[in-house]
Amino acid sequence: MAITEKFVGQPVLRKEDPSLITGGGSFVDNMSLPGMLHLAVVRSPFAHARVVSVDLSEALGMPGVVGAWSGADLADDWAGPLPMVWPITEDIKTSDHWPLTKDKARFQGDGVAVVVADTRGRAGDAAEAVRVEYEQLPAVLDIEEAMKDGSPLVHDELGTNAVVHWSHGGGGDQSVFDSAPVQLQLRYEAPRITPSPIEPRGAVAAVVPAMG
Image 1: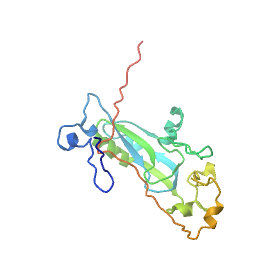
Image 2 (image 1 turned 90 degrees about the vertical axis):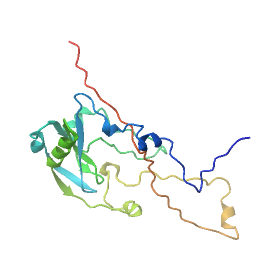
Image 3 (image 1 turned 180 degrees about the horizontal axis):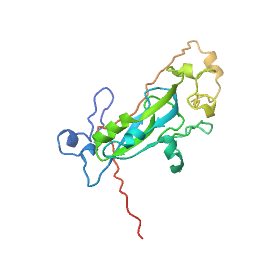
């Protein structure tokens, strides 16, 4: 007899958590390797702001700092923007999304610079020493307001904040709905959903000297 599990209306235990919360697993933040360096990201405090300048001089002079770069410094080193995971329709408007922004912050927390140091603490301290001058721009917090003409644009090159219009149904003779004795018009709002594991995946990057 097949056993059907019921998931609706009850909590579901996460299968990947027990080893981590009982001390049997390993968190990425606990890893320690010889010569390991730590990276800290300098993030915008504004939801919408133009990046006027980035001064890394103080951070570069701090103990343990190996390097520091702004988005503009690294712009020529990236082969391309981050890919669009799921292009829903053929006419979807896909913006370029770079690991660090070089022109303006498009959301609060947008990365504008990175600092690399020999410890996590030193990297964080140096990131706080990076001086970024912003020109704060108008921001819209409501999705429907953002879609109206004249609203501040997140990506100026697209000319709109509407990324995609996706509709379902509509097949067959739609006049039957107009003649129905009972008609309902409902509005549904779905929250933004981002599943987050208790411990994300980590990657270890090693620099291999070129063979001479």
